[in-house]
Image (cartoon, rainbow, N blue to C red; front, side, top):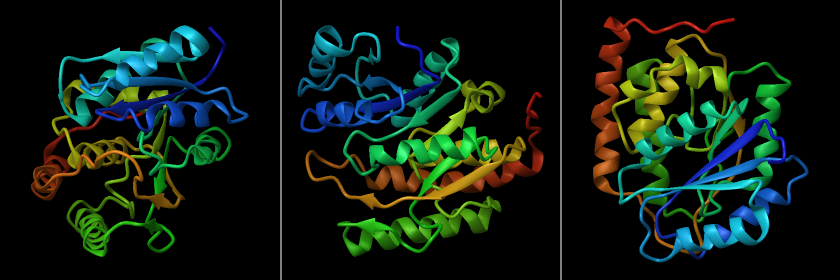
Length: 249
């Protein structure tokens, strides 16, 4: 296997229009990132495309975990985190398959952790205004004010609390009790940031431009948003009563 200190985790469900393109774009970068695709039983053949790429071209850089069905975004990432920790990757990324997160921003997140001394780098849509392209205005407002609501309720000093484009140093994920993370959708992203903050890790928001998908179907739903709305109240209560582990030197 080609040595790499960074693994990019990409969860997928019905992403056949995007998956090969996103993989190739990541591998075009000058940095030697590896990719782990976690596919939740896509009936459109997403996993088959990935396995062909592994067999024919990228067997030393591309990996896949296939799961039996739609088990939730949060559980996909938890599985990926454990996989990356076990294999000693120093930097573990979250990224969507649909090009809403630009692969060219991956090195900027890496640099924030590797060179600027941060433990968690977040690709933020809202740290320097509202950097969202091709989203309906209603969805922009919902996302923006949801982040404001989370920030107000929890005290989390992050502008884009629901962002799913991130780079963790491995020690963050080794410190957090991943089996105790309870949420699966938008609230998973909030809970991970809040927990990292309460553990005392240094967080950096890196401004990025978020572009709505061109191919495929969005996985956003009202239930996911509702989970985030009510989940933050539980997080606030946790913050009062729960003891969080501290980073190890």
